[in-house]
Amino acid sequence: MTAEVAEQNGPALRGRSERIVLASNRGPVAFEARADGTLRANRGSGGVVTALVSIGGTRPVTWIACAMTEGDRRAAEQGQALDTRSPGIQARLVSVDRQVYRKYYETISNRVLWFLQHYMWDIVDGPSLDLRSYEAWEMGYVPANAALARAVASSIREGECPTVMIQDYHLYLVPAMVRKLAPSCTIQHFTHIPWPAPRYWRLLPPAWRREICAGLVACDVVGFQSVWDVTNFLGTCQESLPGVVADYARGELHCGDHIVKVRAYPISVSPERLTRLAASPEARRHTARLAAEPGVRTIVRVDRMEPSKNILRGFQAFEVLLERRPDLQRRVRFLAFLVPSRESVPEYRRYRDLVFERITSINRRFGDPIRVYYENNYPQAIGAMTAYDVLLVNPLIDGMNLVAKEGPIVNERDGVLVLSEGAGAHEQLGEGAISVAAPDIEGTVRALEQALEMDPAERAQRAALLRDAIRTRDIQWWLDCQLADLDQVSEAR
Ligand code: G6P
Image (tube, rainbow, N blue to C red; front, top):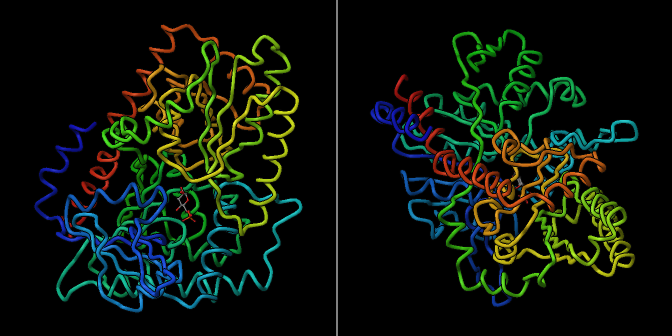
């Protein structure tokens, strides 16, 4: 596949645009306002930033993002391009009014779209979209998207036709707005999270759904993590927008003369970077500190403390396993690396409390088989993943899930991946993993048991399958595929 992409790149490069304008909510640099009044620049956190920083090595990038913190706001007021310390990338932060930002980010992006797109709404008891939700849409999501779109357009020089790459569910309206302000750009949007079925989108007010779809069909290329998402998106647009016709075989939307390519580009990791990190003195220190006693096997999980990650059912399955198999007690332990996340959202706080209650009760019953590390410590998680016997990745539904790709690359014990079918990563890794359905506790108990007892030959064979699948489609491949498709569009203009 890498060869195919390289071939596509050849002829397409002739018409390619020289500069890329990236737009995302979270930027490559985040500012901390210090007590002495100065600003300290840190690298932006999160998977989207990690995935995209290497793009600066391919051509010049202007990265436009929202100011999220007070430090960011002050940096944004200074107005000039900011040094990101990433080669080839300049960043600009856009500051919107705090109330507008809260409505756009916390209410619509994190509480409405994130929940909807992860099928996390309990639709019998909630949610209720009320006047406040409408205000959040009209006075938050729409103006914040407009501010980003204006910043994108104003970064484009007279006569220049850059490629504009817009990221994720925070910015669904930006493509159509940019198309109006700068019609000849090549525009792409990539959604990092799942795109649910057309009927599920009907839970959203029809006007919002139509605006989202209309925002995206202004693109030349729309990207998703998996083929499931592509199919769902084609259906949602055809149902929501009069006159738009989906061609499922070609992966296209026909909107009169305008054709949108709709493609799956499964995001990935950098095996070289991960291997370097796993071998670093810092990660090695963690590996040594976390090593198991002889004869004890280790299950690991690494997740944001996030309801869609299904952490609770993972522990419930572990509890049933210990109950059923007393011979495994004291011979299997569970290391959980859980990163605090979105604690301002009540559903997240509730979920966190349930997880900790369950851990406490299992530890009381079985003599502390679970160790939890509740912090954001990436080298520690990587150090631990070098030595798992079983990696449990059982999200309800997940755009991709990069832990499922990081683990097999750094693991040195031919550890077994137990992977839920709801993770986007399952499309590529299902063959090497043991598959489970996320709510299926009994199935997860059996999968953990099978993984713990698997013979070395099968472990080695499955681990090799996983490593090959990840290495042949790494993060560079993800970027190259998108740039090749975008260059083809630019050339045809
Ligand atoms: C996860 C998702 C991304 C999303 C990000 C937002 O990493 O995979 O698609 O953009 O969360 O997280 P944040 O902390 O920026 O709200």
